[in-house]
Image (cartoon, rainbow, N blue to C red; front, side, top):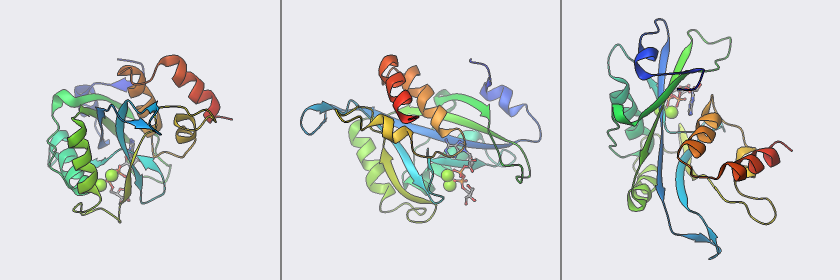
Length: 195
Ligand code: APR
Ligand code: MG
Ligand code: MG
């Protein structure tokens, strides 16, 4: 486990911290943009009520529920589907940057679940219709463009948006960890996004 990251157990042993759990739902796809640029993978993120991009999920009260039960509750509210994530889907936990005005420090837990393309499409449909948070805490789901167009559009522009907490580094780590983008392409997109 890389420095700054905690296991699920280490994180739960930290007293006085609030916990939040977020999940990256993703799938492979054979679809192409403009009929020629492979999209390769669909990764779901969301436009939050505060205008920032983030992963679905939220605060979990560890006095009353397990991390995974809390995450599933948040996913039901934000996505409109029952997706029971389990301990096996837990990737890492880390100390989150929190504003100094905030009462207690926060640990964010990150989960990943690979799904079928049809299941991902079902999540998108439910998130835009039956999810109770739709139009409130969640303004809409977005897919992460992993390609680069000739004019430099795609992943680089996506990364130049503003993200909540450590969602941007959670995304970047996952792209490398799962080999969803080649390291050299990710490096190129990152360099462009900072221009
Ligand atoms: N994606 C989203 N939030 C993240 C992420 C991430 N990848 N990583 C860290 N966070 C932090 C943010 O600081 C965020 O405020 O976790 C906190 C809780 O996550 P939310 O998804 O915002 O919590 P949720 O329970 O869904 O929302 C309830 O919390 O954000 C406040 O007042 C806001 O009404 C909202 C309430
Ligand atoms: Mg929520
Ligand atoms: Mg949330």
